[in-house]
Image (cartoon, rainbow, N blue to C red):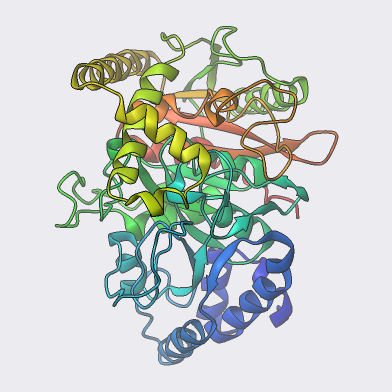
Length: 466
């Protein structure tokens, strides 16, 4: 029998199996997760708010439903955390900013949070984010620095850093994150867990992100199967998001289980180790990813070294990203602007200077990039790259010391292109470097092929080390 103190270390699927068998209850699991949060929070700062009493009340109700054999939904009684950019009724969504007031009714759930409630998930708290999710590491004027569970002197990554650190540390098996330029994949890679940026619109978003169609909502979990389960819950239309896709025709979790027999046999995989020499990848990262790609070939995938047909689209991304930052800052008065992260202010100044023609040119370039990738996926089902060319660096910095990089995009060249193209992309842990820091491998598929990404990711079933 699993001891209550060990329950924080189980996946969502293992928790549900235990509830079903009567081995332990949602109340047992929630108490274990809350105790774990209390233990790691001083070291990691992964949470901005811990909702212990509401979570225990939700867990008691879930325990009673399981006792009577009437579970509420796919995640009944499973502890889940929510990134503090997503609205959650009952408490403020601070967005890492001193410009946000805690006062107000706070009665509305974001669509994905509403789906969690409908499926009986236990909402244990809100996780940290950089201010308005603007950069590649998780620190903010309001909540301070979020640290990496593998080495608290290192960053957890952005901007879902609190969510990734929480999952990696056992402080909730599932978390909702957002990804506007890598913000699910970056911290999941640095923290050694699984992260999925679904196809844009697969998960509805409300209110709309200031960064527009760059921003996706998705799961952070310990493996692809748990992420598929969470994606089943949060996918589908919501009237508040006119860009949301129709609900998927099939369950991602069920399809993944059905694919288990054949695995990735026959999948056409393109392996791009450095985008054709455009990216300098650290040797340890390159070696771990290459070994993982060899594993894919050994499992029956058709692997070919091939690079996508584009030059670094960083200028296009910067144009759209800085315009989003300007939109955030534009609604603030001069006193509020002085409270902002200085990097966000600088990015907003650049965005405010853009002309309509420059924005239209960036949108045109974005569409062309999407067309090129659509053509690439006529030949390949999946593109594999390193998630990041580096492992986690010093906490409290936007860029690695001594790198001469000015902005976070300088060390994330594998992630932001696929926000421009709106494709599904995931990161899976594939090893560690000499310092014990996790290394991630990125899997990208054509738009709407989220199931293909999950299928490829399931070839790496090992649980991350803690």
